[in-house]
Length: 79
Ligand code: SF4
Ligand code: SF4
Image (cartoon, rainbow, N blue to C red; front, side, top):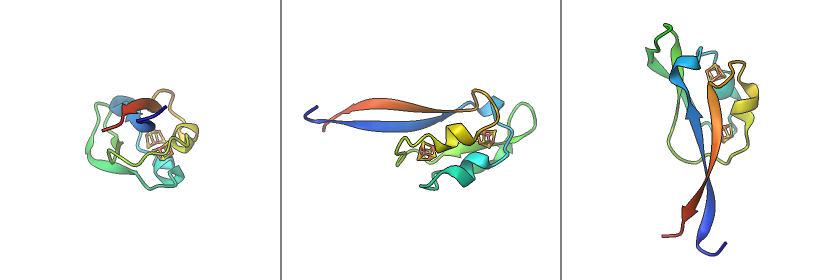
């Protein structure tokens, strides 16, 4: 594992999100926010800040919409 560390990302499927904000409240790191624009169903949707996710999964478990938010684990090469 030398030179490598785990990195997590919250991947949001914009058109599955209904903007209920449950994931926003669930995230301990406050990395999610509601976008001002609307998705194809007319809902505001969530965006991930881009870094800092610890992979806790709270957003995934809080979300009532299947597939709207997923936590992805990546292996990052050491720089
Ligand atoms: S996995 Fe945890 S830290 Fe990452 S965005 Fe979801 S709630 Fe926030
Ligand atoms: S909990 Fe799910 S549906 Fe609700 S705002 Fe977050 S991603 Fe969208």
